[in-house]
Image 1 (spheres, rainbow, N blue to C red):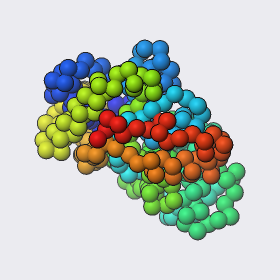
Image 2: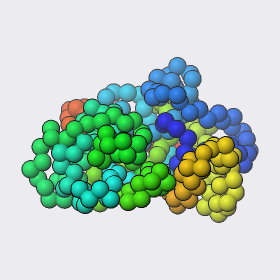
Image 3: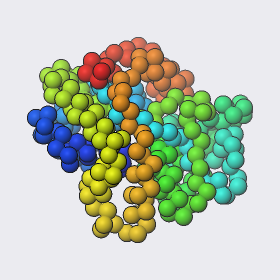
Length: 301
């Protein structure tokens, strides 16, 4: 992933509380300076595990990359951010032809997500080529406030909505993937390569259990988790606006950590079907790749 935020709380709590150590694990958390091809870093021996989203896991699998997800640790809500205060967008259908900011632009992902929502809202004649594209990376709020985009996608509500409001977008709102026809991929999972999984399965099982114990602390002792997080991000050294963002996003993220780390085959089959339908992955590759080749519940029970 790109930058440390409350989505990674089980990792931070497990490290700060000594849980990793109690499981005999030596864990180093690395925040990449730029986008990494995680499977290449693992193959090169520079990483053991990476954090990704189910969307990217499925896309990578369809492209033939050696990836294997093995534990989900966050499930939030999210979708497409917009400024309700502008008044030009009140429902998904209003997004037809708008400028979309999204990481990976000018690839097909942003228009695929937005146009699926537009169709789900009953507007079936929106030409997918009508959308304009802006690559604002993961700086979604900045893209809207600078008027470089009308909407931004691949947002998690627990981070981008509080952030946008703290930065002055008082009517920040979003259309949820799960409510408008898009598979709910607002989740984070642990991934490695199949070969690394086979070699270090026992250690990775300990990682899953350590993060599960940390999740219990997050839910049962949220103020302790808050203390650990604020230490980790050096909150006291942040600007006043950034401190407000840190406070608001932490609080919003607390309920987003599930006790169940497993994911279903049917979920990934549906996700891959949507990726094929919206031309985000090659149709033949998407149909031929088996879910069991890129997701396992073997150690996430």
